[in-house]
Amino acid sequence: MLIEQCAYANRLRLVTPAAKGIFCLCGVIASFSAGTPAAACGVAAALASVTVLGAGIPMGRYLRVAAPALLFLGTSALTLAVSLTPESLNNGFSIRIERTSVQAAAQVVGRSLGGLAALLFLAMTTPLTDIIGLLRRLRTPETLLDIMVLCYRTLFVFSEAVRETTTAQSARLGYATTRHALRSMGILTANLTVQVWQRSQALHVAAMSRNGDGPLRFLEHDHHHSARDCFVFLAGGSLIIFLSQVLS
Amino acid sequence: MSEKIKDNIFELQDVCFRYPDGSRGLEQCSLSIHSGSRTAVLGANGSGKTTLFLHFNAILRPQSGTIVCSGNPLNYSRQNLHALRSRIGLVFQNPDSQLFSASVREDVSFGPLNQGINKQTVRERVEEALCSVGMIDCAEKPVHNLSHGQKKRVCIAGVLAMQPDIMILDEPMAGLDHSMQNDLEILLQRLHADGMTILLATHDIDFAYRWADRILLMDQGQDVVSCTAADLSKETEQLHALGLGIPNVIQLHRLLAAKGLLPPGERQPLSFTELVGFLEQRL
Image 1: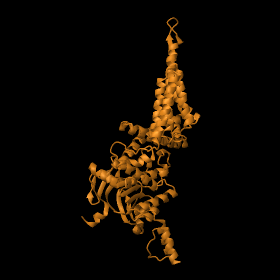
Image 2: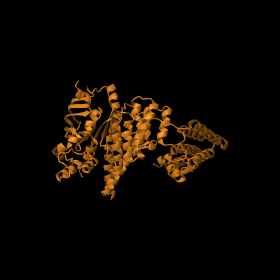
Image 3: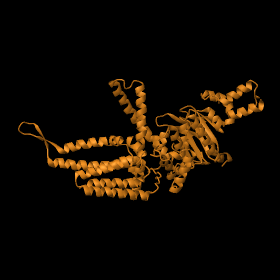
Image 4: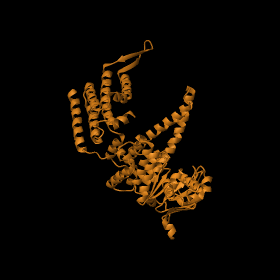
């Protein structure tokens, strides 16, 4: 929901998704071509600045969206840098931090941060509808796109169903005790399973009634100044790649 | 082919349909829908209204009996279904069951693109349809950010963009506030004035009486009454039996006639505005 809110309310909302896609790709290339972890981190910082300062995404929201990925990255880096080695003398384990492991972890962290910042730029400035449109123009297989569209739409339908059911259960003391809460959650899960099936049937019938016979065909959005936007963002992306090489 | 059949867009003859769980959908249902009419279908929940509509759009097929469309028995071949569903637009009761695209503009474009129309024409139709339902400002919005009423309007736009001859709406007023109901009624009047045949299901007897020129009463999968709106006052017994009640304007007219304020033999007014007109003439 946070990503969704940002994507619809930022200064780059009306920029063609192709331009933002190009910039994101340049960001990923810059992160992976950076020779040192510091250069990759510099790329990540530059990309994050463009997202926060350029697109006007509040820093707090940006960090909240990035937090799960950062947590995962931190855990992975720790396991890369630190190794547990069994000791034969006293049947224990020794914790070892080797220089090569730390370097490898720093490299992974730097590149991952750059990649994450590039993808967050795209995700937080571009609504999924635009991203799907872009993927469609890039000739992504129809089936994949149809699944994306349906998942995106049903995500909100089900989150609403979950909210309504949970409210109805709470109003009748469904979550008053741990035991009741477990029971209510079980009922909610069972109920949702039935709803998934019923709603998928209903959507199928609705598609048939409008001559839907397979692929979901939608009109793509027209963006003004597409060529100008693409040129500007390509220039920006190239600058970031150049920066990554200078810092290396 | 008789002239009578030509004037009917749909004719159902003894149509039966049962759902796989054995529950009744339609039972020996015979009725006709007149071309160019505004038809309201009334009946309790489970009386077969939605099942009937799904038959018109050929989503469901009768297990026995026949459906005649514009003088020809319905043909369920792929090509014919495509043509039929382009002519018959169906708006479902629950908008969340109908809207599956991510944004409003995309969803409205789904039907016309399936008709094989070129993109420029589809673009124009989408704009036009969204303007007619007053949703052009929300064209780029994601569907899940819309209110229930707005979603309903998008559903209608999605069907309007296909430019059907007949529009079928399953309980279109359900869940709408008073202002949105008025807007929808005006839209339906305009579409009908433009030559569209409109068929809708409703539980609101006052709205049905005021808006429709023909009324069908459904009960247990059958059409038990089929009459003009003007003749609905003669079906008091059936209306009571189905728990639908009598339109308020008829009740008031009868009361005024009983009190001697209006002559008893006078034509029944279809709306309160008409009734006020009668009173002004009289007083």
